[in-house]
Length: 239
Image (tube, rainbow, N blue to C red; front, top):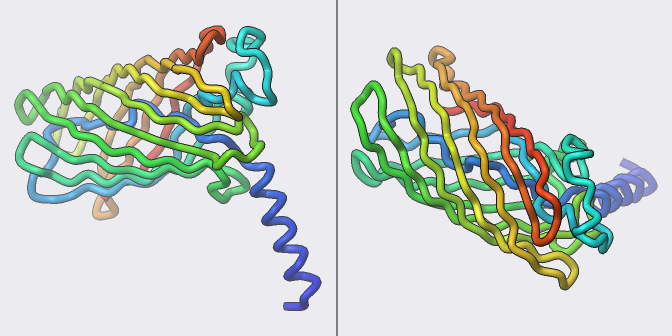
């Protein structure tokens, strides 16, 4: 490849980085539908959507002037993100959850990244039960002037999955959640709330693992901003 082409590609990469996206808040972060297999770990990867909790501070806008519900589907305040999750059984009931996110952007994960980890337990029988979970998360776009940012956040989320397993390999569930985060944006900081519920279904793909589809509705509020609607949508493959 010629030197001019290399410089052009590097330039496009820099522009993509600078024009990237602030991290989205994917919730509920843990959706444990059923008791799970205490003998095997579980890997998932896919796309999930959620609000950018730093959006009310974008470009130093007064949070009181944030548009909120008027632009619920604007990519300035809502987006899709790559989600890679790993579940490791500790014993028959207690599972450890770990995950990483990367903002979906043409189609590389730039530049918002996040990590989360938490625990869940299961109460019930093999057919139906409850799975409370507590998760800690952090995410950042490294202070870059990005879509919905710049922004970084630290927080925690609790959720409670009510699941039904009508047949082996198939699981249905409703997962209400409530999260509290501290948001940092260009010297401004505020507490953000995000709460709602998601419906989820998992079904087998033969020997190729399982597919999980989720959708729902959430409400977000950062500092003194108005509360805005945040649609929940996702699709993940698991093995």
